Image 1 (cartoon, helix red, strand yellow):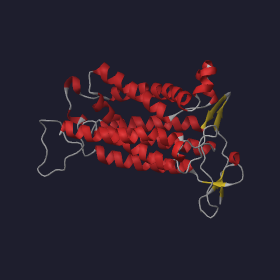
Image 2: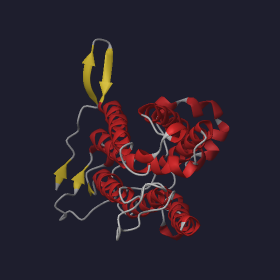
Image 3: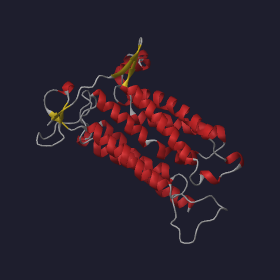
Image 4: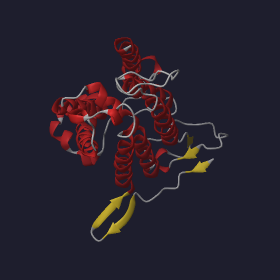
Length: 283
């Protein structure tokens, strides 16, 4: 079995300033979003939009800025509500103590949705069009974050069979071998989800009036790319949770499922129903 390489969380020191690996993974996530957003501008249906409906690189910058606010605010509030509601009800001021740790992906996702609603409203665009633009650019950021989790030796997996070739001992979790669940999530929620969504989004048809080659395959309708993200992330995260150690103060909940799995259930159902409804609505 392997031993986690206990990497120094500080990547480099710049005088009195310490630059942490986790912070660098966030910067990588933002840079990848900008790069992929720029590429999305050249894809259909966005490339064919003209006039006030046209997308520009400034839109990508604005979405990223609002998205960061949504991730931080939503992730923190979501953690407090989903994982430690009683504690933070008794200590409300500690909700703002983000330096103590505690962020929820599902809360962050809700924060990003609010940000996209505001962006769509302010630019007089369809929410589903905005969501379709953003969705394929997200998984690489999630992958980058999971690398940060692995470097920090946090969010480790459940106890694994010692014969598993990649079973790993995390020093903060005792001397037993565990699943490197951060890597599982990196591969599923990050790399695999990105490849599937990017391929699916590229099948989008040109806007009306541009024309479609005879015999071409019909691509996703407006909103279906975002719905596919909800469904895909929910499924991959649900699977990964079987290998990830549940939160110590919660353990496993009803039906032997973790809090992360229960939060994924509405994502999977909502994503599937939205995909079916949007396909019928736009068909």
